[in-house]
Length: 222
Image 1: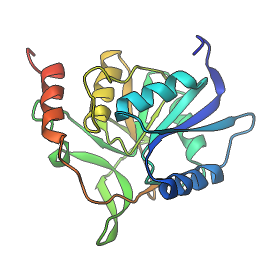
Image 2 (image 1 turned 90 degrees about the horizontal axis):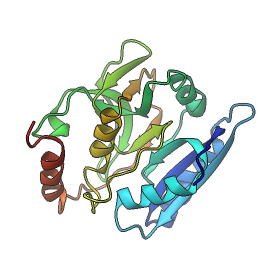
Image 3 (image 1 turned 180 degrees about the vertical axis):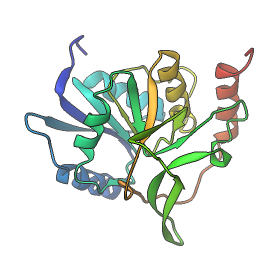
């Protein structure tokens, strides 16, 4: 990847192992309104050894300044999504935007139980519902971490594939890396959710091992 990125280009990046999910996700991306003069690209990584490794691979391949990392089962339904993201990134200190965020990340790293903000349509095996995790009063709410279902960035920061070799905590780690560099992370105000997350059964096989790695990296010795 060259040093100069295309400031009029946005890339959508996903790791994928399901062709139907991938094609549906892409169909929503292709329907999003594109600001004048902007181009978009979609990069799909199949067979990644970890989320961080797959995202690093795509990040290095793309010349787009703006990148949206999302799960293959996330469908963006806000037609003005790109425009709204770019408006937030007019503030250069904002490095990352997410749909759901935690106001605080502590050494317990139990993000499901923390104070959260954002909105999301969520489908599971048994029900579909709209979640309002917490109201965002102004244009946006600064948070310490966002959920990895969708993470939009305007700066390239390496994903920590050196320590996160599975599919958990890559997102919270990336938020910590952005904050280490002085960037802010925000969740925008939404009148209605911008995304549908068609999530299934939660897999916690490697969660607690990755959680231990996260705590050792970011909280041990503090």
